[in-house]
Every structure is written in structure tokens, then in C-alpha cells.
Length: 123
Image (cartoon, rainbow, N blue to C red):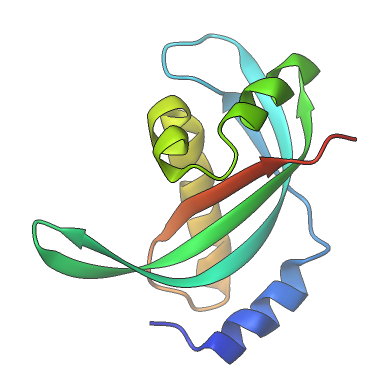
């Protein structure tokens, strides 16, 4: 588990940073997107796997730009629904979690990140 004060410090460090994902948005799609996003660590999260508790880091992602733009509406339809993120955007979810995991390791986080919230901030 992570210290809440440490999470606040990390959030201050990354709050003005824009991260980028380039790749497919949907499983089985050959259409590639470029997504610029901001990241906030929401806190610790305990998920259960086969009855065993596992610690994770909860992530809030704000998409600030997406190319091609028409996919912004798709992001808008799944906002703040972890079920919809996992179901409709599984590939995006795991790609962002993998990328963010490498970023968080720089700060010493060992628990895996979980994308729990995504929203689209239209330019």
C-alpha cells in the first residue's frame, strides 16, 4: 500500500505532464489513434483474485486530445464506468496501465496500476 502523502507529492509532480499513447483503440482494429492524456493517482485499491486481496494503484485518466478526433465520442460514452472501460476499451486499458506502470516504477510504486476512471476533455 502507498502512503497518501506520497501519492499527493507524485500527483503534484505529474499534474502538468501530458502522456501519450499511440496504437489501436479497439481489439481487432487496424485503426491507430494518438491519445494525449493527463494522469492522477486516485489512491490505493484492493482487488480480489480468486479470493485473495491484491493491492493496486487506482488511476484517473483525462484524455486531452485524441487523433482522429471522431474517437473522442467513443471515449465520452465510457466515462467513469469501470465496467465499460474493461469491456469496450480493454486494449486501451491494458496499454495505458502497462505504460503508466513503467512511469510509476520511477517513483518506487510496486503495486500494479488499474485504470478506474477515464474522461474526455474536449479541446
